[in-house]
Image (cartoon, rainbow, N blue to C red; front, side, top):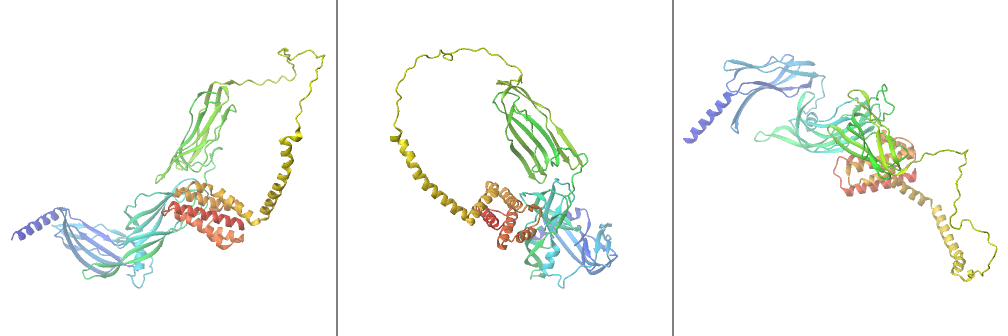
Length: 588
């Protein structure tokens, strides 16, 4: 009896809560864009009980092929009641173009409520498989790998953001993903932006609602003009797709399949920087920068050092240009600058500062001027150049040797007084005194015997050394191998310094391989594809196995940036690159 009472109270509260809501009639479609031979699901839902006299739209330019079907649901969650009553239709367009699904209406409490009209874009007929429930077809229609570019026509040196997004509809589930082929960025300076998390967001693709995540984000800076191609990213995805069947309890049966997806090829067309107003000292800086030159000490002693710091700070291609050089008087000894970088690369671009620190040491007492320094950059937003000039700097050397001016009096003779000191001037001796000279016997000394035996020892040693040199010179293969090893160590020295730092190591490794080919072949290989490199090496009669190894190392350098790599794997990759250069150099 009590149970029946509580149920009655609960239903009364649920009814009151639902009736307190404001009634709305919403229209929802399965897709906003479809082929003229495809079907569309339209659902009208009302969130309040008591509605009657539902009037559907006239569906002008559409043919109703199914429905209406009705469903009712209500629930009480965390003290909040919800109610929904829906009417579902399946329709097919009669023609192409922009078609409108007009509003539906329903009466609640004497008030008529209408839904909003929906615009549908109908295109040419699309290919539909014999089985619309084929998992591969369902996956293809519900998952899209898309490359999004922030600017397709930047200036050379201007940063472009590239995002790879995976769009997934609510009809399927994604269980696993893996990149099988990383994109190539030929003609760009590139830097991947680290993503700490992969939140699921809501967005639209081709006018339809999708869930999506950002898989990868990179900053690209074009280094030349022309049509620069970004090859597709490819990845394998494990997807759970509905089969169109249901189990005993009415739940949809899904099937897991593994399918490869690829993004579309993208073309970026960088523009050359304008010639109008281009300063003579412009060296490629593109962005928005501040420029400063500072002196650590303005007063010092001779042989005491001071530092001149040149700093460019701001946002732009900070890693792709050289800082202007400071000029000092000859009396200030200047040393090679020390480069310091404090650069951050994130979703906002490259920002921070780059500095050159010069050490100067004065030699003489005096006051010296360090002339002003100018720096020019191009601002892509304002589309114009800017030049920043600093003030002259002065160094006051308070103590030290005086710098005496040099006077040339070649036609005059300066007289000097003769000063007699010690025994500089003596009388001529008139008497001689002879004493016997003590003489050592050289023929019985140790030096005599050492010199006597030295040729007997040196000649055989010289013969042995000469013989070894001839053997070494005749060993053509060994000489080539040693030369190739030295060459490999030379090009890979920077990569060896970066072992343990994944991004820096693989960038240096890839740069070393391209620099080696550039030195050997006299061409810029960073701007050509791997297929073209293969063709060039094969034309040079390089063994195909070695060419394949060289290309594999290049591909590994690209792929390893997007996968977790251990220090041991990096060391193995370094040794593999070294052996490839040695073998390639022997044949070239």
